Length: 163
Image 1 (cartoon, rainbow, N blue to C red):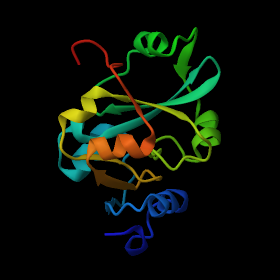
Image 2 (image 1 turned 120 degrees about the vertical axis):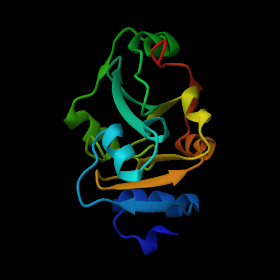
Image 3 (image 1 turned 90 degrees about the vertical axis):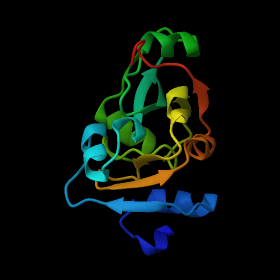
């Protein structure tokens, strides 16, 4: 299915899919699915198959971390990975300014600005993962390696131990 068949994807994200030549399965939900648990329940999959696109400020610059929905980001590991001094969650205004999307709908690629992307190795445990398609009402499915490649993601280990 292409996004032209599904005008529910955010226009910027639909444009990114087209530019990349990607055809993906899109699903739309009547109610917003702003958390990994909500998305997993709506899709009917394990929360680990949900990609969280989390935006952090790393020494004042936005960085997207792609994490599976059953794991948490270890900020110390992000700081060490990037050789940074300060890593903190970005506020809603920074997320929208950097990515062009609201929290809960940030896709792994198709952002307004060029942003560094880190992708946790845990995503590769799955054959297919689901990520936001630019709105809290739409998600898309893709093989994790393909998703990471198109996001320009650097594979890292930044999940909390034991998660």
